Image 1 (cartoon, rainbow over the protein chains, first blue to last red):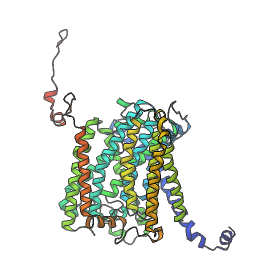
Image 2 (image 1 turned 45 degrees about the vertical axis):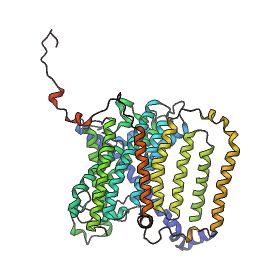
Image 3 (image 1 turned 180 degrees about the vertical axis):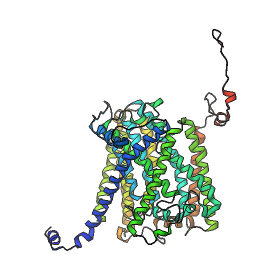
Image 4 (image 1 turned 60 degrees about the horizontal axis):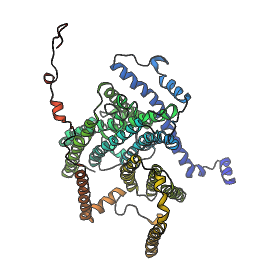
Length: 365
Length: 198
């Protein structure tokens, strides 16, 4: 301890450079990610509601703050101040653990998402697999919540949701495999850098590998639809189909636990948008080569790249909101058919085609 | 630092494994099992086998344990009643436990040189863990790998056959027919005169 104090006062920096500096940096990065995500989420929620309102020719929230900009914060305050109701006969520990788990899992996914060159908390070698693994855990929050509520509708909702999420995970996995095959790496930064140059190099279009371009575009669509199903968004929101199940697994939740569920759900949606951007839409790379950026300061390029990334994520979020506003809900057997009989064979064939092309043309580095 | 992380994770694994067998509520048991799986994945990351760790999470936690949880939640059995007679089985349990412990001890002593984390190479002959596994799996053990694939395929087909009963009383949706339906088949416009009905 005295060494530590001595080092501090003599200005010896070896203490900081050793271990604690790194730990502090990582903690700071995590904090920054969380704050930025939560604040942008507040406005994304508003955007979501405004888009639906626009489609329905309503005005949407417009009372709190200018243009309703502070609506999400008002909702937040309301959620926090209400009473937490735990139903009699509920399994209290699991009941409260479920929303916490949903939120935590939604947050820890972001640890590997590169939002700009070098702007990533942990540049894992198996980044894609990590994302896939963690998002496959998301189903637990829902099952636990539905079971612990000790009530019929939540339980039915959670059973539906679990079956749905497990089904669509399979095709998401195969779609990810096609991208991994093209890149030859599971590192998300490598995947993004493989799409450098312009929109013709993005995996969604793959015009540089013209033979498999239609296949990759189809895979992009499959991923988008599966992402809708995976996040329980309309038209696949059967877990909370209000006309059949009241609100699915969320029926018994109120106040802060409900808020945690909702934030977790929306974080997952934004994560799926980010995954679409990283895997198929070139991540932080601009759609056209920008020669004038070559002699710009690195920090300026980093912020510019982040802006490009954020714009793409916003675009996909807008698409998610438009889908919710326009498409009617699927029937449950249609949902299962789409997952197992359409998407799974399609993505399996795509894996075959892409791997054949990769071996034949030798595109991998 | 690695050592501290190892001991924390190992403690959690042990406690979770104990929780699996001790807890009265079977759902809690499964949740403890999931915790044990997750923490074991953490242990795998610690020795540098991150690919295996992620696979462990995807396969066991993401798929297998979900099914466990399903089954356990659907069972409406009074487990306290079920456990009444279990105390009589303790000699059998003791023998099984002693056997397993003996086997592990035998292997540990027979090998003698137990590799510690520092000397362990998680990705021999390749840059990453995933590559190393792929190289071994698709060259040295190709036949065994494919055999395992065939066994899994057979198991899958078997499961499907078991659920196929060819019931005629169930109404099945014919999606092709539903999609092909046109407005002309579904609608008929009638001009109803007042006071007459159709």
